[in-house]
Amino acid sequence: MEVFPLEVDECVRRNFTVLDWKVQYGTLMYVVGDVDTKERFLKLYRELEPRGYIPVLRREGEAKVLRVFKRPPPRRHKVIWNIILLVATIGTVGFAGYMFTAAGSIYELLDPTFGVYRLLHHMAYMAAIFFVLGLHEFGHKLACLKHGLRSTPPYFIPGPPEIGGSLGALMIQETPILNRDQLFDLGLMGPLVGFLASVVVTLIGLSLSYLVPYDLVLKWIQQGQVNPLPTEPLLFTLVREGVLALTGASANEVVVLHPVAFAGWVGMLITFLNTLPVGQLDGGHVVRAIVSSRKHAIISLAAITVMLITGFIVMAIVALIILFRGHPGPLDDVSPPSRSRKAAFALLPIVCGLCFTSITFTLL
Image 1: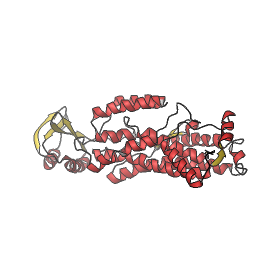
Image 2: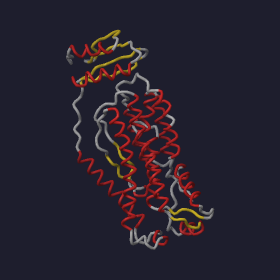
Image 3: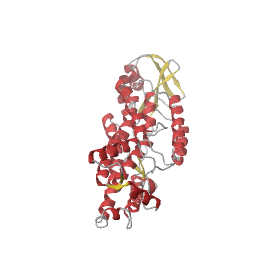
Image 4: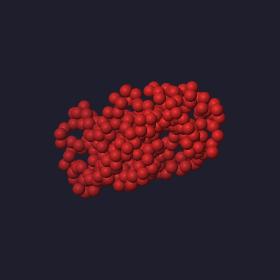
């Protein structure tokens, strides 16, 4: 049985009003009576963590129960896997760019100089994709820095070239998330920054795209020279229509997207998938910061159904497997999120809805 130093008990009693306590299953368990638990818990964590202990605060029935555990040894992170996945993603994104810009592409009919600068167009597409992915992960990193959390470098995820060559990236937390405020910020910041990056890339890509008479584009589609986009996110439509209105395009003209504009579509696709409130995806973190674990599981099942309907079968299966493992929640699962975060929660369905994308059918 674990023997706890007296100073651990003193730390708990210094920060919380203890109503009852006992040793249960080899851990210290306290029933605490305080209402203002958030700052008390943060202070207790800062005192116990250097001593090798971790507090966990949960609500059990009507009681607030604080348990103290021995801190597990840190997991060893092997950077080789970050490098392998990065190289693989560069390969899949590069191949996607090659498919768009290869000799004989429709762009050579639209732009006589395209072949001369083919490599630049190819590299611009790759740079646009990694710009969106990189800023998404940078958003998560900002949240980590704000709250003093440590995380691994990003693990980039290769994807099918047909949808851009990447399904995003993820970082693994090396230090625990302490409360619902931190969980909310960590989940929302990545998609929010990625959302803005996707808009920027789409604007740049549309400025490089081509206005072509609709009849000609329809002919190219029938000949298989041009492939229509899968379902266009509302955000993409709004940006495109705004650009067309500013350029004074006629009603009979449509846009043939430059590969960089398609990278903006990929960014919105990745943002849509990440903001779905599923398990431990970004959207799942945000929802778990607001609701209980039971409600989070119900919402996750509904979001997985959306994944299936929109054609993301493999991701839905993976999400379902992860869901069965449950969401650990923050160490302090009693203290509610701040009012400002409750208000900002509306950003999640707005961003998710604006970036909604399906790959089950195409639009002409």
